[in-house]
Image (cartoon, rainbow, N blue to C red; front, side, top):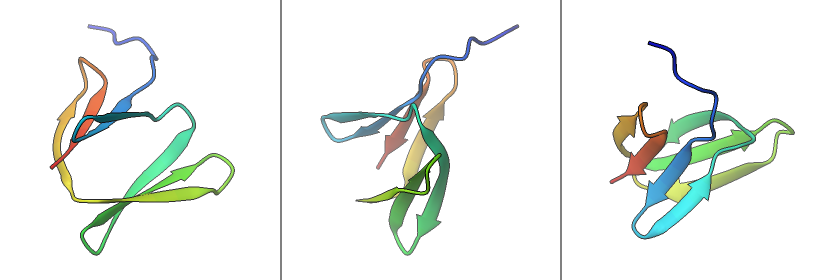
Length: 61
Protein backbone atom coordinates (compact mmCIF):
# COMPACT_ATOMS: atom_id res chain seq x y z
CA UNK A 1 0.00 0.00 0.00
CA UNK A 2 1.32 3.41 -0.91
CA UNK A 3 0.31 6.66 0.80
CA UNK A 4 0.50 9.95 -1.10
CA UNK A 5 2.56 12.88 0.16
CA UNK A 6 -0.36 15.16 1.11
CA UNK A 7 -0.17 17.66 3.94
CA UNK A 8 -0.92 16.58 7.51
CA UNK A 9 -3.33 18.57 9.70
CA UNK A 10 -2.92 19.25 13.41
CA UNK A 11 -6.37 19.15 15.04
CA UNK A 12 -6.76 21.08 18.30
CA UNK A 13 -10.35 21.46 19.54
CA UNK A 14 -12.14 22.98 16.52
CA UNK A 15 -8.97 24.42 14.97
CA UNK A 16 -7.16 22.76 12.05
CA UNK A 17 -3.56 23.80 11.41
CA UNK A 18 -1.73 22.78 8.23
CA UNK A 19 1.62 21.09 8.85
CA UNK A 20 2.82 21.74 5.30
CA UNK A 21 6.21 23.22 6.27
CA UNK A 22 6.61 21.61 9.70
CA UNK A 23 9.87 19.67 10.03
CA UNK A 24 9.46 18.39 13.60
CA UNK A 25 6.99 18.11 16.48
CA UNK A 26 8.51 18.07 19.97
CA UNK A 27 6.85 17.33 23.30
CA UNK A 28 8.06 19.95 25.78
CA UNK A 29 6.58 20.06 29.30
CA UNK A 30 2.94 19.31 28.46
CA UNK A 31 3.05 21.36 25.26
CA UNK A 32 3.78 20.55 21.62
CA UNK A 33 6.40 22.60 19.84
CA UNK A 34 6.18 22.69 16.03
CA UNK A 35 9.35 23.71 14.22
CA UNK A 36 9.20 24.55 10.51
CA UNK A 37 11.84 24.21 7.80
CA UNK A 38 13.18 27.70 8.54
CA UNK A 39 13.55 27.20 12.31
CA UNK A 40 10.44 29.19 13.23
CA UNK A 41 8.45 27.56 16.05
CA UNK A 42 4.92 27.61 17.49
CA UNK A 43 3.70 25.98 20.71
CA UNK A 44 0.33 24.47 21.59
CA UNK A 45 -0.91 23.19 24.95
CA UNK A 46 -1.68 19.47 25.24
CA UNK A 47 -0.31 16.19 24.01
CA UNK A 48 -0.87 13.97 20.99
CA UNK A 49 -3.92 11.77 21.50
CA UNK A 50 -4.08 10.28 17.98
CA UNK A 51 -1.97 10.04 14.84
CA UNK A 52 -4.08 9.03 11.84
CA UNK A 53 -1.71 8.28 8.95
CA UNK A 54 -4.48 7.29 6.55
CA UNK A 55 -6.36 10.61 6.91
CA UNK A 56 -3.20 12.67 7.55
CA UNK A 57 -4.31 14.03 10.93
CA UNK A 58 -2.56 14.53 14.26
CA UNK A 59 -5.05 15.14 17.07
CA UNK A 60 -4.13 17.02 20.24
CA UNK A 61 -5.97 15.95 23.40
